[in-house]
Image (cartoon, protein in one colour):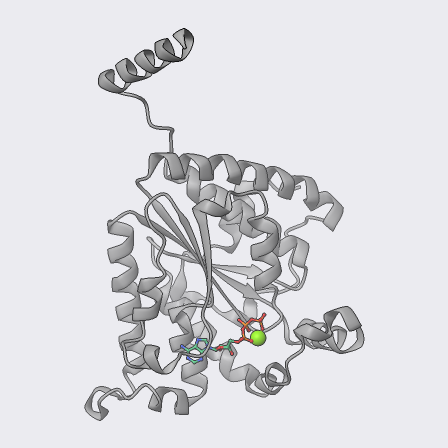
Length: 292
Ligand code: ATP
Ligand code: MG
């Protein structure tokens, strides 16, 4: 099996200007032959994640923001469930962003996401995010109209303006101690088709089926262009995109787990060391417990 750091580097976008979605194979597995081969590596990744999360929490300096974007049925929910299975729920919060409410529409597009950012010491997961503002909103112009932005501020430049504002926002967050990881789970149109059919055929999966998702398939090419533009304009050194093949769920989960572990390892986390005063307090507490 390929070394794990290669796996992470393989899907990180480091040359965004040359990024082409059409050149990314959604069925790629980097030479990892099967689910069984990946399972033990995933298990180790999940364990390591739990250790690192404890340090993140105890050190209470950094926050980690993990963003998931994808077409429907690419496996966001399952990936979040599996990868985060070992971690302490107290230190982690998942927020799903759906179509904005009327209260949310009264604010700028970052507002609702800012309210959900992780505190220091925590991991925050965004299941969809402000990136919908350059995806679904770009594909459906009536959604932009619903945002009631003054007419003079809306032009063809709006998408480039949004990319710039998002990059500035993410730079601000990283400069203040929130590390950012962004995953685009890249599923093929064929595999999405199969998964929708399975949702219809298998009674246990019926609940996941949505007619609206099937209708969105009509806009597949527009979404592909919007995703490509997003990756090209918002892959930065401080918050790069990982474009993760999503036709094989077991592989998606492995890559995501490894990328999160690698990101936390880069933060150089450690448990806080007691200073002299704290050591004195601990010694006094020990003494008291021994005599009572
Ligand atoms: P699942 O279907 O797996 O439960 P989901 O993330 O697809 O999860 P849905 O409730 O089906 O959840 O869909 C959320 C919808 O909200 C998506 O179609 C998404 O594009 C839309 N959405 C998210 N953010 C915005 C936004 N800022 N403006 C308009 N629509 C948005
Ligand atoms: Mg959906």
